[in-house]
Length: 260
Picture 1 (cartoon, rainbow, N blue to C red):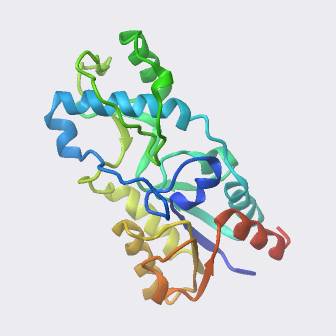
Picture 2: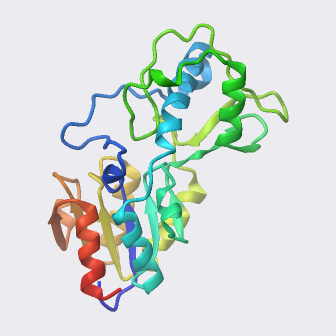
């Protein structure tokens, strides 16, 4: 990476040291995520989603950037990184000080109206949800997940906030299963990779196709590819350098090696 401008792609493994569990790593919980179609077609599904998402988000939002996030921010400041494309929705890269961050799958800190497009701060919607449901037990949290969700059961009495502009349906500004990454967002991420001299992939198994597409852009441009991850990834055969290990310590070592 010395003397190069490196684009970075990060996955859930970067945030595990912040207490946010990985989707697919060893020991990851079995998940049955709600699809976009389920969310928009069923009022009961929306109640279940908002109950679980809200309960988890309060704890999820308390997570702090770890040394891996901070190392990437330092590398960007040093000029070794031209930006970060993240598959995570936790917002920790920006909170660590990274300035050029492309959130491929959106961010849990925002809520969007599916009818009029108005965007709200998650905190404001969370406050409204709590005022509508004063008996909701925040101590019922059992398990945090990478998307800030938890498992819930009876939500028949749950009231879900609606858009204060048009009364429309609200949804966290994240890409659900069954949704596509917005074209403009992917184009921005692809431009970042095309403008780099190398690609560093940290904490991603590359199961999600959007990440594989960015890797393919790098391959076609004959860019060196560095992969840091615990466990196998779909980028094994295309990696120039493969580091088996945790992202925090590996990124700290890169910072030290470059004198950043």
